[in-house]
Image (cartoon, rainbow, N blue to C red; front, side, top):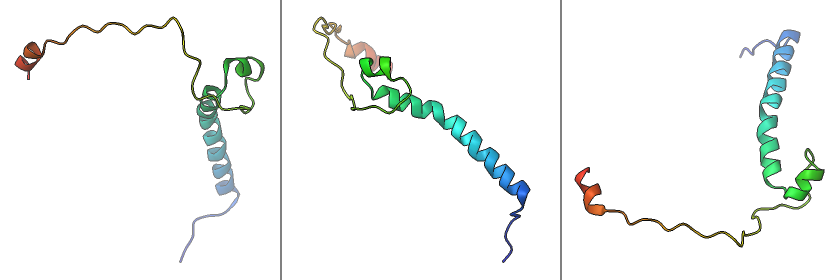
Length: 80
């Protein structure tokens, strides 16, 4: 059974690929970690890990859902 080359050039290629993978994944990891922080924690700790996970924000007391217009089903069925 023959294996591929394991010389210094192969190690260099693997090192370059690992570095490229690391730099490609850093923005995604940063976005995920940032989304789990509260606004106050993000203000004081932009890069570190979150101390407590925030999965839901506080509800907005002034929010009122919009009134949705009725859907004319007869007109929509003509296009089907």
